[in-house]
Image (cartoon, rainbow, N blue to C red; front, side, top):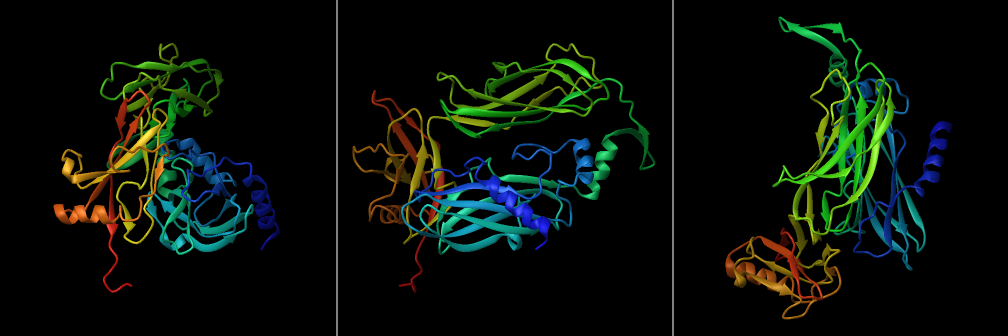
Length: 427
């Protein structure tokens, strides 16, 4: 191992404990994914909802030694902490996706024993043989890789981008004006005179928010023109997608000056009002809302975020289309800020309209204060599989009902799941 690589690994080990906690609520108390660290990063947008549409950034990435490139090796390090009182044997998986497609040949899967109060640091090296957007995530399984114990929280995966020769050519073309003559592009220099303000990205997390939960907004504003611009105002609003004309202002950020090619990042936090309607929302960002600045382009000053779902109860586990093993562990988890008592409903009716096609857990008039439920022996899979046989169905659905002390109730969305029966020859 080269001296440079050794120093880089020591550096990764020092900073890993300073990074944010990436672990969601876990069915296995005490296990946490502390961090995912990359040996090569790059100042290209690296969030799940960010688009890489800056030709300047792509071209700079080709000469920046800190940016990963085609043919390089990328080192990935993750740290798994056992904060429990006993040693745990777990399977650690590092997943690699390129352009949303998993590269199973490059993933890492290995069993580790983590002593109580200790941290296991797992290193994995990837040969960057593909171009495009890479996504790195981590899963912690039981020792037989049958059940997920901890998963990287959506939005906390690590991303980086490897530009292809075609990406570079497109970026060069975007930085020049030209006309197409007989199928060939004749490039002429772009006159970088006036400024040009545009949003590179508008990212909102979480995608599924609870009423009363804090939204995190990250917006990248770029001056893609050729002149300095001063006193830039922006307006950030939100609206229900069913009521697009009723917009409400979140913030009015501003910046004093932007040089050509400069990117300014606004990091904002906001909690939607308690009386806000449940449903789907979007964030809309407008730079220079009063049109006070003369720009190269005036029609690219507005950008919208991904759709955000606002509800009172959020389903966590099992995720949609999850499959349980008949003789495995059945665990249901959800989250809510507005309600304190819960019960789940499981059935074969995807709309829960037929009372004879679903049942409650816990049964009868009982409610629970926890936000997770492990069914009693005999409740699942027995009741669920009996219901499937009686109704000639092979798909199950579940939802959560929340109740306040006042008696007010709310119902979550619906997720699908299935049960894989034990084969007849296994005993």
